[in-house]
Length: 273
Length: 151
Image (tube, rainbow over all chains, first blue to last red):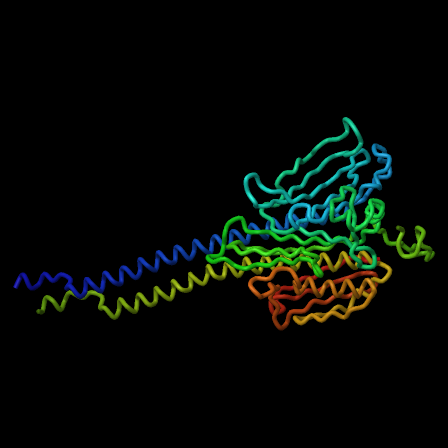
């Protein structure tokens, strides 16, 4: 009698319990993997979004200031000769951009955005170099930021400058490369600086780490009617293109009419330059 | 036998039902994480829309003498360029292309676009020297209003 009262688990019961237990352990394990994956994807996308926001906000601000010359600035006798510079295919198919402006009456800054490669790697970052009073000669030259990593892991950086009629302006440079030299003379490149009305920026940012499980075929165009600027990748990274377009207020300055008299300030029709 | 009957545990059916209920809860938690990816995508999309709205206002500022031509932009999800040689026509076509992310990134054979649903509209208004834009995305639920003095 006593033996009958002490009931343990039967074999079937314990097998079912083991199976259920294993299923729940598997569920916990797979959900851990799933959450981990989600966390990675979200943090990679966040990194892209954050980089792009910081980059485009800063670049847009610099472009708005581009060419501004403080009326009291005397350290450089011809500051208007260097205001904006684009060098196409500076590194691979990526462009570089430089702008000059005077934040105060005795400082003139050159802001230089350059794609650069990390040491011992093919990964590219966007550097932002700031130099006070370049080409003044001697003691005034001062490097504020020396090509620091501004935006990590970029895949494409395209700069398109347009004039007041929406036509693409090439070449616009003082540091001209082979592409620019084939597009026009130095004088033309110089004259085009003051004609820049709109600047368009395409920035493709890559995720720092791999996101996809399998390779994905990705093609980046980023510029309509692109002349050989398309890039193809076949890897596991996530990429996203961000675009901003800015009116360069200090270059092709629109003619302003005085509201009271209807007279216009400045000479020329429509635009000062 | 009498003794045995008194020991009452959880029956197999009860425990299975319990498991199913817990499983449903689990699925809900899993969806939470999928939702977080969606939220991140929407955040990126908003980020892009912010820069695109900046583009629209910058273009209005850049052509103050023709500012009135920059209003009446009204697009839903199908963008058709109108052509034209004036700056404002070109700029509006540019807005269409960029809002549609034309020629940005192609994955496989599919061009990546900002998702667009019915109820989404992108409009501009210019009156009294003030330019404004209303961008409605996410089935018209996410609204962005921005304005600038043009003249």
